Image 1: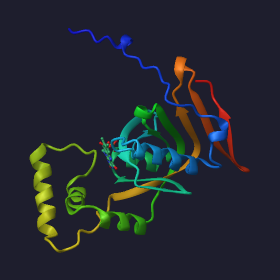
Image 2: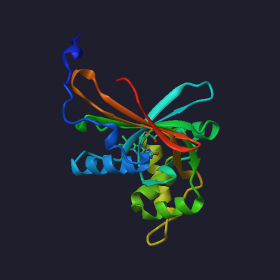
Image 3: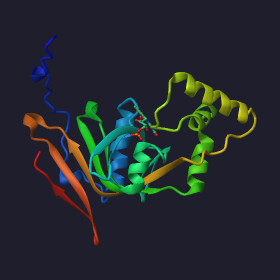
Image 4: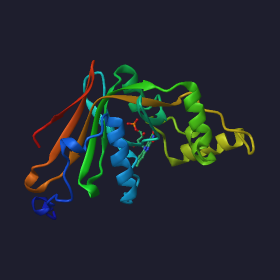
Amino acid sequence: MTELDLAALREEYARSGLTESDLAPDPIAMFRRWFDEAVAAGLHEPNAMVVATADPGARPAARFVLLKGLSDNGFVFFTNTRSRKGEELTANPACALLFPWHPLERQVRVDGTAAPLSADDVAAYFASRPRGSQLGAWASHQSREVAGREELTAAYDEAAATYPEPTPVPVPEEWGGYVVRPDAVEFWQGRPGRMHDRLVYRRTDAGWTTVRLAP
Ligand SMILES: Cc1cc2nc3c(=O)[nH]c(=O)nc-3n(C[C@H](O)[C@H](O)[C@H](O)COP(=O)(O)O)c2cc1C
């Protein structure tokens, strides 16, 4: 077996620092600033984020989704509400998000609570998706076992036959989205000697407070 010498794979983080005086008044404004910098830096899919959920036995699961909206209410993504993540969020809306912007030596971590989006918000976003993605949403009962690729292809073809162009493709009943209302948002900036900056916004009754954590 080939040995992977992972111990030698290490980077010194020295791009920049994050000080208390850099912080915007609230984490959403701060996130916007870092998101814009991630876009300006040309990061591949800077809106890709990891969503971590937990099942009723507190066993965690994580997967990527795409951030599709940001508002004062929080972070928006779309998915199948009967998928594994959807079922887990229904039973336990506590979740965590992670933006892995390591080319910038940054990560943003969000602890929050997911709430389903309104049917209007879901319909408006679904209508903006490419037709192929809309048909795919009909064909895929996300996270369920399938006999093989052919079963999925047949379901896709059936959806395409049911909704021939220019018939609009309606929103599948199981398709939806969530807004994650943040309780805490951490902005992490890598620094030399593993002396990283970690500044965390925490929601309180009086508004947002910020603290620094040891790296
Ligand atoms: C970069 C990237 C973006 C993705 N975006 C989404 C998304 O926005 N919505 C979604 O349902 N799945 C998305 N997926 C697929 C999910 O990672 C996952 O496979 C799927 O949602 C099923 O997850 P679950 O079984 O844990 O519910 C994305 C995958 C990648 C790699």
